[in-house]
Image (cartoon, rainbow, N blue to C red; front, side, top):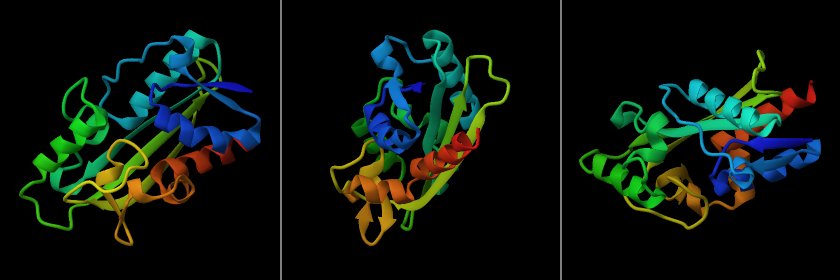
Length: 194
């Protein structure tokens, strides 16, 4: 089965491809099909994920998988939240977003509790009235400086215990505990029950 994954983020694609292999599913990034990103104008993770999945399915004619995920920092009242990818501006890089987060927390004492949240949606076609939905939460804290070179996004600033950041975990370690790993495992269970 071929699925279009509504992303241009190759880090996310790498994390999901291996997980879906046992279902004989091939994930194709929408960017490889020339599909532009859907606008993320909604205020919730579920609305954004559904918008992205429906757009990808409509443009590709394939079943679609989409996620919306973000970092929720308690000291920032849940920000950056749904704006995590553009915390430092619409065209911000991961590095710029991390720098903006450190500036926003400059006067915040430790522990700076936070969590990653992921909501994953699968639709059979663009007008699917019964999307499958799975979610995951990964608790941690924000470090005072970046550590590690694995992962992407806020991983170098996300402390996960044991004195390590998410960017210091091997991919298999990360998948076992991460928000996205939890959401993917939940989605695989849902797909197997179809």
